[in-house]
Length: 102
Length: 165
Image (tube, rainbow over all chains, first blue to last red; front, side, top):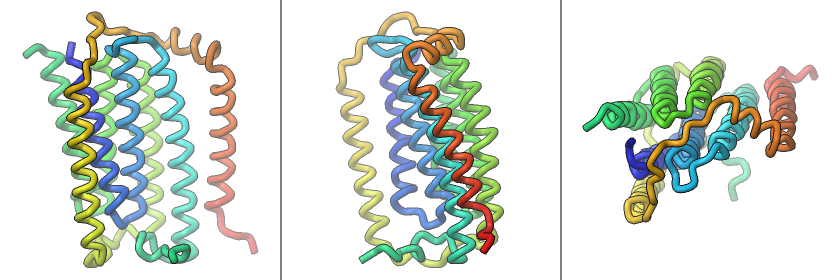
């Protein structure tokens, strides 16, 4: 069996790529895709601990299901907000939406 | 090198390369396709870990539903616009890269030095055990997620529809 360290390292790399995308990309769809990538990395951690962790049991997989549910709801609402934003302000460039910035 | 190690390396490379391609490709449609590939590779990682049910759910929800949702979101906004011109936030990009690089280095250091005992045989959970746990211990959370999905459905419809004056 592959050691759990490798799974955790893969999850950390995916999480950091997603974090970099959230911090630096300008297209809002890509920012949302990066958030999904980060949630995926967390799920890899949960499933890895559930399968080959020190106290392997089913709880990690149950929590993965909850994370997937919340991610699906978040993606639906976020894309609806995106469409409303585009209709009202005619752009989905992150830099153009700084009304609340002081 | 045994077969599991080989498949792990293959799928991990696919996941990481397509995750980088999400950031690096030029057209938005190509980026969404790279995202689908990344989700597929993560589903393969779940199969490798013996979590078949989670892998199937990952393919159904992420590859099947969320990617299509992103395609719709891309189509209804400015997808022809390849870029937004030069980015005025050069310092922020460099700072972001350096900060995320440090975070990754610290996390990898912590993971490598952590003393994680390997439990010899991998634990394989079936859909039946997940269902029993979901309707037993986590019943309230399960009902809560049902309410969450309903409110997300209604909220998405209300937010995205045209204002009827």
